Length: 70
Image (cartoon, rainbow, N blue to C red; front, side, top):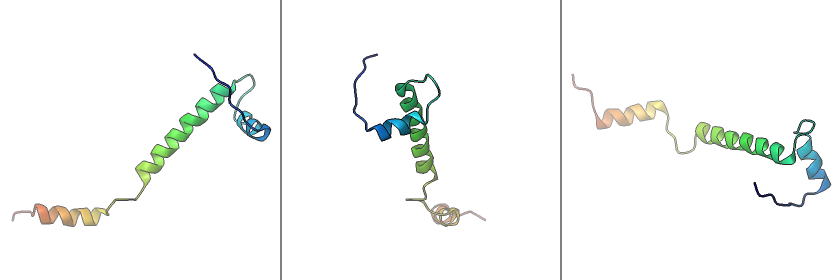
């Protein structure tokens, strides 16, 4: 795996290291933080009420399109 160097303030470096365990590399810590962030974004997306309608409204729309025959 190719590596790179990034510049961080000492404060940011300390904050990142606070998520790690003894002997763990910054790469490992950041990968774990990234995986958690992706899961959180997915959760927020799935639980978002943006562009949604209530179940009652959906039922009314269904009944308009496909009325029940008696």
